[in-house]
Length: 246
Ligand code: SF4
Image (cartoon, rainbow, N blue to C red; front, side):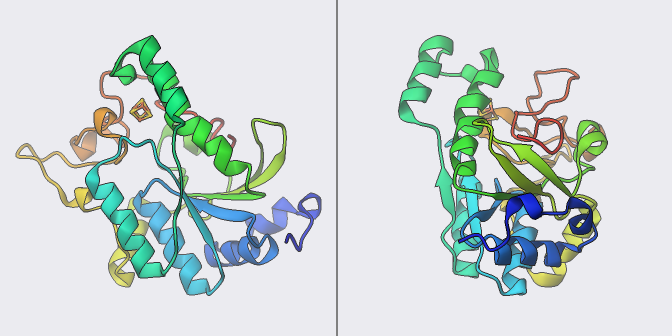
């Protein structure tokens, strides 16, 4: 049951809170209606760890494209064991995947990755958001230029069906170094693929669907390994349009 009406939320007050207090605010005021959404990136697991240390009951959901690496699924098993939680999974509907493949074949990511992301990410996210008043995400401002320009720690978002919800990015200002330090100091589970180094010194900057993410040289930038056949552009999948929206 919601204990704090959404319309009385003062965003400017919330922007001042530290990550742990923000998580406390969300889960204490919106029990059952706030959740951490993560695809298993390091930032998402750090947020889970912070929520667990805060001692609040919390929900976690995973938009499962069903195209993830085995290491990603194994990470979620470890997260569930470590924190004693059940991660809620929202995947694509079989009929949507079938329609996608009818139109674009068995490798739709090469022909219309926007359509593939829509079916495998955006639509499942919309179903997840229907259960929420507060969406907590691992968005960080250093993940891409576009995100840096637009994102805020706390903002309003509008769901696809016109409902207003609160979007919280508690670690917006953290850097890779901050995240890695926290993981080391607190023994936080992370995707083992981050330890992979190719014979050419390439590593995963972002881990996502198998067909669309490759290891790259870190100096090439964070998003170079995402949809590597695309040049330029925002390289966003539609989950965080406008940096903090839906
Ligand atoms: Fe499809 Fe690739 Fe998007 Fe995953 S990242 S949903 S495989 S286009």
